[in-house]
Amino acid sequence: MIRDITLGQYYKKDSIVHSLDPRVKLVATLIFLISLFISTNIFAYILATAYLITAIILCKVPFGFIIRGLKSLLLLLFISIAFNLFLTPGKVVFSFYAINITKEGIILALKMAIRLVYLVIGSSILTLTTTPSKLTDGLEKGLSFLNVIKVPVAEIALMMSIALRFIPTLIEEVDKIMNAQMSRGANFEKGNLIEKAKALIPLLVPLFVSAFKRANDLAYAMESRCYVGDSKRTKLRPLKYKRIDYITYIYLLVFIILIFLTRYIKIDSTLSIMGSFRGALKLYYER
Amino acid sequence: MPIFEVKNIKYTYDKYENSLKYALNDISFNIEKKDFVALIGKSGSGKSTLISHLNGLYKADSGDILYSGNSIYSKDYDLNSLRFKVGIVFQYPDYQLFSETVIDDVAFGAIKKGMSKDEAYKKSLEVLKFLNIEYLKDESPFNLSGGEKRKVAFAGVFVMEPEVLIFDEPDAGLDTMSKINFYNFIKSLNNDYGTTVIYITHNLDDVVEYANKVIVMSDGKLIKMGKPYEVLSDEKVMKEADLELPYSISICNKVKSMGYDIDNTKLTFSDLLDSLKKL
Image (cartoon, rainbow over all chains, first blue to last red; front, side):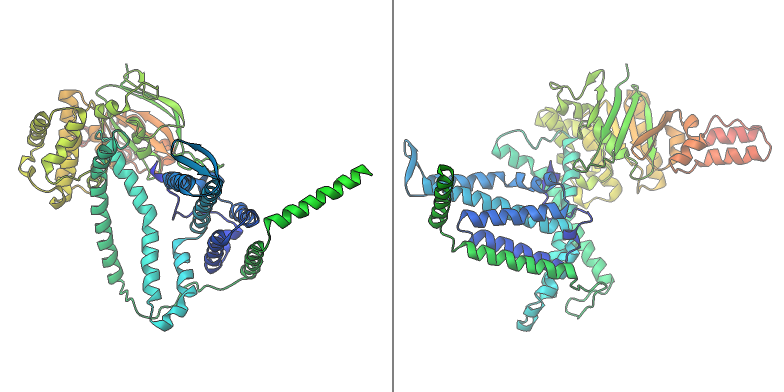
């Protein structure tokens, strides 16, 4: 049940996507997210879908595993769809009592749903195929130019890596605590909202206690190994671009150019193209 | 009728992989009432996974588990009530202590079982007295020592008066005296009240002293079940499970190899001393 949260988990597999430089994957995810938000018409969405499917196939992570993360998103998804569906003004296509569903509302709700789902899948693929340490290495190196304006990139990267590193640990811990409490008759699923919230206390208290204890232990462990935050450290495996990384960058460039080009495709004009095509076909058959 | 009938259960953690690695692979065994069962095997052999099946925390992918003759996987079976009958004490007490005072924490299970608040607190106090830790009742569970936490965690399960008690490595991290006290206490529960006990351990010398049945697991499979002597002296099984022989057996084997005829069917230290005296 609780294991269904896939966001932030790493899935070990030997694939092209896994072997890419983390910086490339970060840029790829960023470009994908941007493309989702500048998409204005169906062609852009088709492109984004193709891009996502390519990534899913190449990363070799079972599809079922990737979309497990979506389950926890269902509520948010429903709310966003409902808001867009019922509250967008425009041409009414369907109405009962005070509720009007407009054409614009349907389109917007659909767009938002696709964006949200793609967003989660896209970022899931990043974390599923990249270990937290590589991810933060990538962030650290990719953002190192910010050092010039005195942003403590290394520290931020460390904090991120610790946070990411402990997500699976905490999930596992939640599982164990739930088992211990369920063995004592606790029920986390039964009851109304207030009862459910109350049932969480036996889960949250041990979780927080152990998280603080863990943080404390970690701090001691780091200090006993003489960790100092602001020193310039070198890497055991410095990040280096390989051929596949450059190829991916080119692919990304093509993708983002195509996405921008879709903004200039007018639906009407394509329809007229298709119209003339149909006309041509008709002429051909009539002959 | 056996209290537990486990029939061919299989369980895997990574259901999304095609190459299925089973944490439990086709496990079957029966446990009778009043049994004192030791579950042994290397780390990662599936012991903890197995005990989590016995009160329905995990559901087997295939196979069936019968408690007192009723399948716990049938639709109308009340798993919640099963958990009051089969009490599991997990290895880390920190995962279950959450209340402000010890007595609140112990009473949690009793209240969940359906007792009124007064009854539950009365019962909890009795249990604390029974375990000789009444003096802890108003302490915060977070300020206790490791051993005390374990006792409180045990009290929290014991208060539900389970028919079967299951322990996940109850002796890990206990000093020798506390360990002996603990096992003697459990043994007396087993003798006097007929409580069925199942426990995971890595300490084979204690298995010899207390258990009347041993289950050996290796790689998710049950490789042998039987009386302690039969199982622990079976070198082939012990080798397959990658376990060391208990002291008493290695001593017997040594004495035998020196040419003496020693009765090695009894394995506790006092019995061993007796048979050594007889030589």
